[in-house]
Image 1 (tube, rainbow, N blue to C red):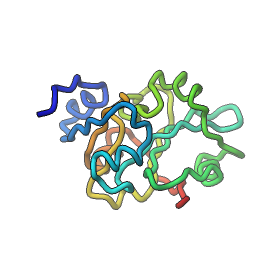
Image 2: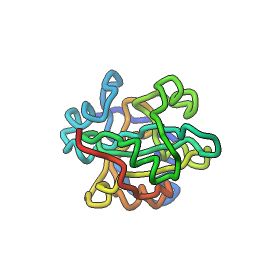
Image 3: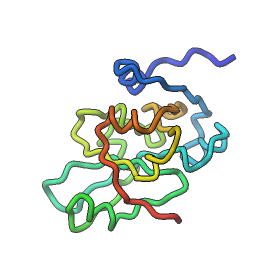
Image 4: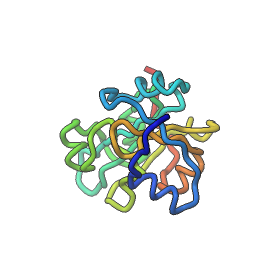
Length: 163
């Protein structure tokens, strides 16, 4: 029997839109998407991490980029997609400062209308389900990728590569 999980903003957003989801609770000392996949016994390419990136020039919103745990963000592809000369990953400290969420718990669902451009990597559209952060370390949500894209307004992009 699992204990009753306190609802996060991400869960309330999904419920408000009538979108079904499943909560995946895991030990909070697991800090990466690969660890979540192993713990939850789901394919690693179904678990999506949310990365915070920035353009190296003014005039661009900070970006939330969701990519599969088994892939790496290609910053050159991202720059091309957003029309910037160069993009970079935010440091852990900067990501936490910008999102007010802990790394390992950053969720696009918890950051709607907070000044971020939201992107999701193209392979997500081929999946029957996706696992993303619930906005709190130790909690993820399993849901339909099309529903996630619809709710977040994420732009589907090709910005990853196999490591």
